[in-house]
Image: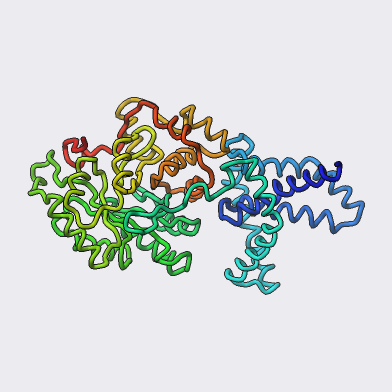
Length: 458
């Protein structure tokens, strides 16, 4: 009995201390902090098993308090990321850990060159090989612990892609690129971290920069073009010649085709400026032109953006190619239940912008209405974050995913993008989904009045 308990304890300890952190590193979920942890752990074990007994005794005394304390900080950072100790580690990483990493990394590189590992490909192959060996020894333990920790480790509980009504697969989490800083680096690093869905538009004014980021990522072999899903949008001034607009977009993005091209708004006039008022291009004239773009291979899919039920109902009455998606503002503060029900029945995917109720539009809205609204501080969100050991942002994104809604949060922070992609590997239940739909705050942060002079949305 004692041996069985000891074996069980050692198995769980091995998984907590080595297995799960190694699993996270292999999956690309963590960054240099955990790499430094393994380096720190390796140095300690090397010293402990190399020196003579007197030196080992002295070493053990010195590390008696330091080693457990450092390990505790790392474990808090992984398992309880909002703990004060974890936040301390994050703060240290901004300066001291980055500085240490910059000094240690070249030393490691020189050593690897000496032993013959002198290129990224062989380094990646060697590291992956070692991690595969380590992971095979703990895979059975992970499977057993999944049963006792439901919805935390099982990445299959939330599909990472959604099948559109034309058969294409679209990632469930992407990057909304409106008002993003350092967009070339953001695109490149996000793709490196696993991002495969990128949403842009002519109106965002960043198609050239996104094209540079995409080209760099593709040239460096981070992924293949067919692995990416790129969304573009037709601006209201170009509705009379969408093919010309799309070809210009493709040139700026340095792509041969888009995966999805959306009609950005179901209207084309700014009524506050009489000089901009021009004859409308009705949807029954525009949509056949968009269908021709699919026929010519310039885009694989077409869809809508900011369409309400009435606009969709009109379009569906005559279209030859059905819209695959409708990109709209959607979050717990602006829950469009009726629109979601209609789109679900018609097999039209909803793509949610402002999914976290954050961004410049939200800030401006809150400022204008003299209110303080933060979805991350709502009690229901905080309680779920503590229950699942996730961040509030991951809870909100999972709320979208659990309903089959594609989310495209915008961020210029690579760590935040990694955090967003971490919203896949758990799933809140149906009651918890409903608990975040009843805040009673109907707040649309992206106002169309500044584009059209009137509120065109029903």
